[in-house]
Length: 138
Image (cartoon, rainbow, N blue to C red; front, side, top):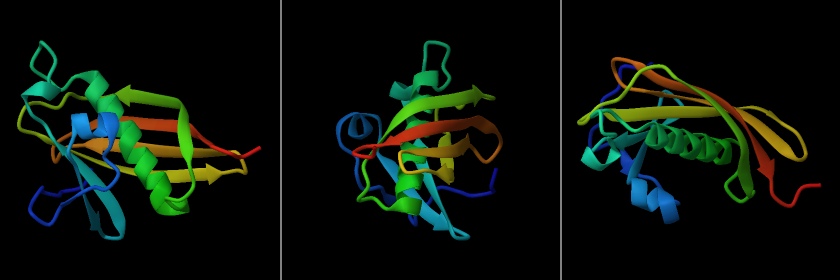
């Protein structure tokens, strides 16, 4: 968890088509050499109990790790999620900004192992690891 605050220095992320465009907008800012991405939580992100829906948190995690992989290995390589393991640790709520970071753990010729974390300034919300298939690789 990092003591960061969402401000005008965060810019809207590229590649927000389809579901990402529906769920976002997502924002990003490089802090101490690490790309941080963010989602401002609004009413449509909440579940009936008034906290961030788990599906929103998981979709945000997938997006953040996907973009982090591209940051590290290049955005011209195509890849898709084949496994995402996650632990929801705390809940976000209306008005929160969920921040996230991701990184590549290992890359082979055909798959990428990566990890990520979602957090607010107060809590770690989710930790995840996963595997992404490089499309077109043998």
